Image 1 (cartoon, rainbow, N blue to C red):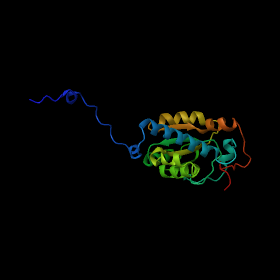
Image 2: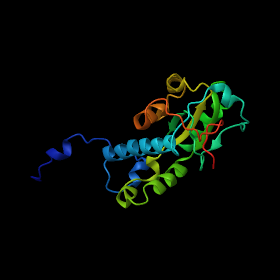
Image 3: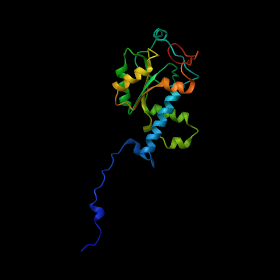
Image 4: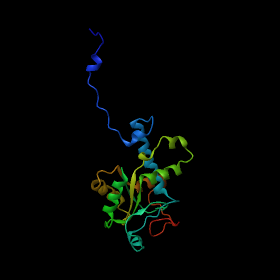
Length: 201
């Protein structure tokens, strides 16, 4: 007769959580990963919004008269200084689908795209002197984003609300004017911002 206590064997076992891309980061809790994701997304949004030295809140007619490219533009080194709405997605494929949907949208003056890898490369440049942060933040913590410049620069909050309904799978939709107001106050005008909504390069 086997006297081994089998009570532990009879207890129900919790199902194993499905693997996720975030699991590739070693020794990090789920809460820690989501905290870093939120922090990274906010920092990247702030940097993208702050760009150069400030902002100029255009009136739509001034921007409408400027020659604009057709379709979304890779963000790259563009320094956007007009008011924007950022749609943050989980994957590059979702980002591409949103950018395609917004092409020709009457609310949109122009839009920019940034892949997860591009966002991660920018993150590493910004925090190059903080190795501990770089070691604990992987590419999967970065969103793929569509950055939209609305024709009506006074409607960013309303358009952000519309995008939240239109793109329910988005990680986040942010009115970047809110970020600007935290750093420089509402209505700050940058005389170096061109009529196309960018700083000169």
